[in-house]
Image (tube, rainbow over all chains, first blue to last red; front, side):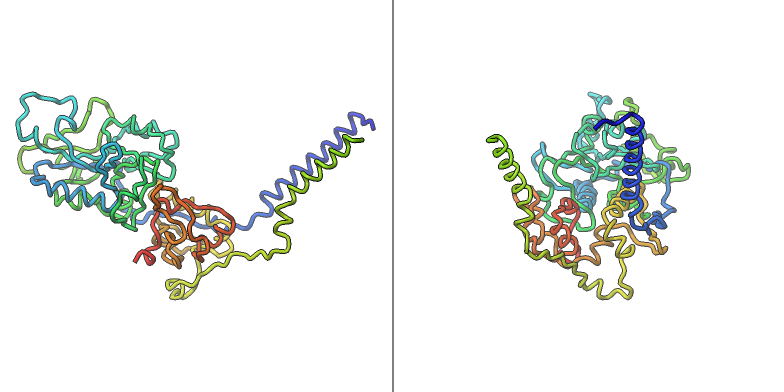
Length: 267
Length: 154
C-alpha cells in the first residue's frame, strides 16, 4: 500500500475538482430563479427632500403647561413611548427641563426670573456631527443624507455606547419591557423591546411620506421645521432675522435644533 | 478479546442513541403544516397574489423582509416595486398582515407575560406565519416590537 508522489497529486487533484464543482453546483446551480432581481425600491414622496432638516423652537409661544404636554403627548402616543415614573427606567423622546440643565455652560447668576423658571422643550438635536453615530458599533444609529440621525432598532444590541457619547441625554435604554408600561399601543408604529436604546427620530417615517414631525404639527406654530440648506425655508427665514441659541455649541456637534428665546414676535 | 467485546457493546449503545429519534418517529405520520389563506381581505382580492410569486415567497420571504426592513428604515424608501412592476407600500403591519391576519398573534405567542419573556402559548393556532414556523421550530422575533394585524386588535 504505497503510493508515489505523482499518483498522490493526481488523485488529490481529481478529488479537489469534484469537491469544488459539487459545492458550486449545490450552492448556486440548484438555486431557484430569482424574480425579485427585477424588483426595486422607491421613495414614497420624492419631493420631500432636504439636505439638512432642522427645527426652531419658539419658547415664547409655550405659555401654559398644556402647551408642552400637547406636544409631548403627540410624539409619545404616536411612537408608543411609555411613561415610566422611575427616573432610572424613564424613556424620553421629547421632554422639558430647566434653562440651567438645557443650556449648560451659559449659566448666569443674574438671569431673569422668567427664563430661569421656564421649562425648555428638548429632544434629540440631530447633530450635523453626531457623536452617537461614531460610537455605535453596529451602525444601528446612522445619519441620513437629509441630516436626520435615525435609529434602526432591529440592529441595536443595547451596548449603550451611544448614550455615553450623546452630550444631550437624548437617548434612553429599555431596562424593562416597554409594553408592560404602555396603556395603549398604537398599532401603526412598533414598540421597542427590552435591551434596546431609543430616541427621537425626527419622525423620519412621516417625513418620507411628505408630512411634518408630529410635535411640529401639534405645537400650533411654536415649532418650525425646514431645510437648513435652503435659504428660502421657514427655518432659515427665522434664523436670518432673529437671535437663536443652540445647546452646547462649544462641543462642535452642530445641533439642528435652534431656540428662540424671548424677544419680539417672529414671522 | 474481552476488550473487543466492550468496544462492540459501546459502539452498539452509541448507534442506538444516535438512531433513537428515527426509531421513535418510525411509523408516525408526518403531517405537513396547513397554510390558511382564508381571510376576509384575501377573499375580496380579485387576483389572489402576494407581492411576489408564491414559490419565491415560500423560499425567500425572510430575505425579502430583511430587504424591506433595510430599505424602509435605513434608506427611507418605502415603496417596493415587484418583478411585475406593481408597487406596494413597505409595511409589515399595513401590507403583509393586512392580508395574512387570521388569528391574532398574541393568541399564538403571549408577547407580554409578567416575566417580560416571549413564550409560545397556543402553538396549535393556524395563523399564517406560525403554522410553518411552529412546524420547523423557527421562532420569529418580529412581534417583540411589531403589533398584531389591525383586524385582530379590534
